[in-house]
Image (cartoon, rainbow, N blue to C red; front, side):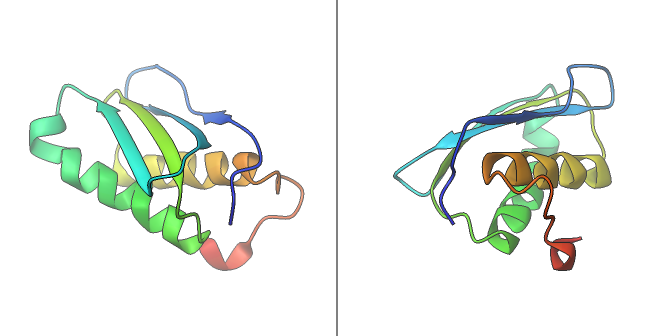
Length: 97
């Protein structure tokens, strides 16, 4: 699927993650800012990539600012940002959940 608009989900509060997505042309391009990127950066990216694969999004620029979020929070924010970017807020894809 193609990104229809730039979208944002999450906050910069402690234990949360903010994800911003915009259109891309070279696959999934990540920009991750996190104090724990060395330890958990690959896992954060894998969680987000899994959600994007479920939505069949293959080209996007993804900016992530992690404040110590756990995997379920990261997944929830990724699902939200995908639905907003695809303009499917009122018609969620239940199979992704």
